Amino acid sequence: MPGQCWPMRQPVVAGKSRQPRKLESMTDDTSAPAPLRIDVVSDVVCPWCYIGKRRLEAATALVPDIAVTITWRPFFLNPWIPREGIDRKTYLETKFGSVARYHAIAERVVAAAAAEGLLYAPDKVSRQPNTLDCHRLILWSRSAIDPGRMKQRLMELYFAEGADLSDPETLVQAAIDCGMDGGLVRKLLASDADVERVEREADSAKEAGIDGVPCFIFGSSIIVTGAQSPDYLAAAIARTAEEQTRATA
Image (tube, one colour):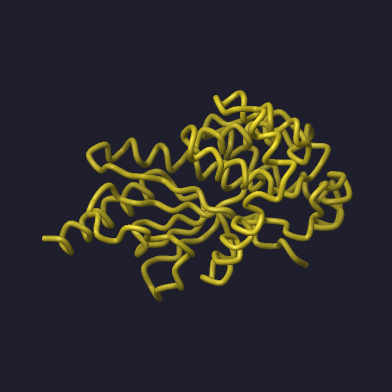
């Protein structure tokens, strides 16, 4: 079934083995030695991505002497869902077999989120969205605010508040909450602006061999798949920074 890329178990590490095909526009400036670039491929409705974002933030705090820039890349966890979204019950029955089966599996995820200080309230979610417009909004936020802030707000709306991310007005209000121009965002959402760009980037991730998220790409060389611990992610950051330093020495 499409969209089965979110593993319900703790994800595994994809180390520095074979070099995947690079994501589109991933290395716009290969000459700059610093800051260290981190590309994060994820979706706003993936609970491990929600947890992984918090763990990455903790990881960067563990290596404060290493400057990083984080680029949030789109991924469609459920590309088969229509643009208007579907009823949550229908979604859970289609993907997991039954609502009860999902909730039995999700208990671990709820606990993992709580351990990171995050709230995941699956009972509040009544509609499963297509996330194309969410990724468009994150893309547009690059020119106005920290895109990580926009991504966090969308995740909080979905996981903690059960908001319908298929509703354009929900996205407009999220943009306003983060300091963006609501009128401009409303106009852009009503258009096809950057639809092809976001879809192309998401396809690029799949073509690069990424089939599970979150996926962290450090300096385009070291790849870590899954919501790994802050210590593990910090070690990957330090290792990549060291390799970059040696390469430019």
